[in-house]
Length: 316
Image (cartoon, rainbow, N blue to C red; front, side, top):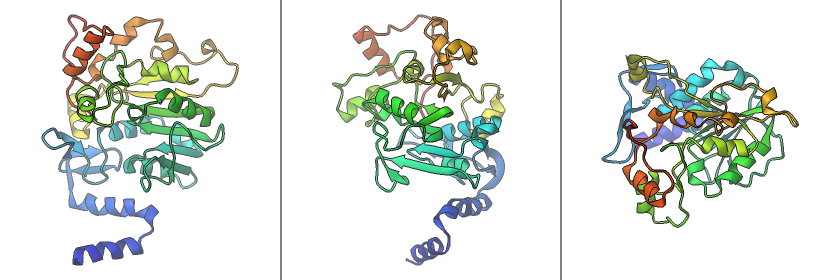
């Protein structure tokens, strides 16, 4: 009871917008060390905590100071490498907000930060990503991590992201990837079967790398990025990141412009469909699910290719 009262007293004295920073400072002292480093909060700690469902928790996953997971630390690297992305984003939309990323996005005092979630109390506003109430061209940036695999009408959600972005604005999209081709079956509604096929009871599909093409169809320029590909094994372990992990960086083009007029690099998605070899470039980032491989084969959608090396296990 004394501990509960003390926590309530601290919350009453500290404004909500500063609580995360105060909490992080306290835990930074408690867990200080040099075995691991979190780029989200800049903390050196003795180790990262395990995270995930009982019996299948991932080791070396969660920062004990700020709570950042592997994908959060990955994004922190990306934003640190490209500081102008945040510097030029005066208004930011954060979908299903994670506290470590919310803190990064709000670190500049002048940013107009807005977060949304379907669950009351989980964000600043209750809103469905497939039916945003914001006007066209409302935001300079949208951050959406591990959300689209929960949404049945994901293409509509992508169109909404493109609609509310201003011309020249950017969106960063993350989803778990299970191969080169997306697998979805609307008839699969049983939670156990969804877990078996899609990795989680509330997932409605298993994305392939071709999700990038869906984003392009929504009207976005898309690049496939691997933020820490050049890391050595020791650095990747210390910072708890996967060197092969992917983010999709999207920009809303100016009206009337052609892809040939815009920056086109090897990982630019409109070239993706014309270069099938790119479908196999990112195999090391794919999660492994033998049940999904079997389902794809039964559906005749994607027979397993001979000689493909084993993919990594687990997920984010």
